[in-house]
Length: 374
Image (cartoon, rainbow, N blue to C red):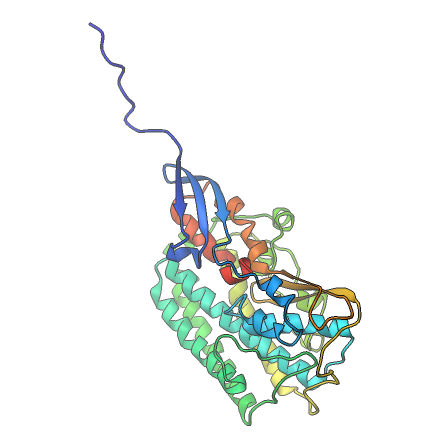
């Protein structure tokens, strides 16, 4: 009697699933097409473009002053550094001299922004892994930074806080003392984060050895910022190509060894301390003088092109601007955003790991989709 061939107990076919674009752990409208073998990730294809921003093309139809507003809307949790990168690009194209006091104020604002951005990253990254208390702690300190920005420029998210040629307003009375007081508070709170995470067995098991990328691979794939430095590559625009007042500041660039998720956490944690160190130096050394250079009311740079980069919280943020010398708008406006460049590494990071690790690895590269879909 003929019997039917027994079927295997488990189906060994590869499974293709969509993660996002509405998944909360993708940190925005990011869609990942994952190819799985059980719980193991075989391949990953990031799909972007759901925000339809068009900021680069919009900027080519706005005058140079109006574009500052649009830069706020890219990395909307780090608007001040977006402003800084753009205005310095136009100043470079126009050969404008920025007063020293304005450069010091810009440095303070940029490092406050770095602290605020890293606080949001640390809190959401920890929450993705189940440590909700860290999120509450980080938001507590981030509110203090937003209070400082609100007192300076009246806004808490998109600041429009810089102008081509300098700063729109001077420091409010007593603001510098409040910044130094915040630095003291933040320095006292950092050990609380470390106590909750650095030696936590669950956190270490979820991050150590997860998403390892070597220095050579990190360079090849275009990583920048903390993920690149966590792989042991000494690259920081503040040191290599100083801007604002960073050439007058003393600070160290933290580096990782293993290039895994845990190292990326440690690098950003040390960046907190270095940012506080820079803020204290800049606040205590702010010189007297004007806050605006001799910039014309109508900005019309001479014909030419330029590229300028800064070290934003998420990595190297660059602007490429072309002027035809006749228009009050750029002929070509192009942004090199760190979130977009770092997202390229995600497929390489997740291969071979479990589906649960995908959430960890999205968080560790710290992306904002407003900057990716610019």
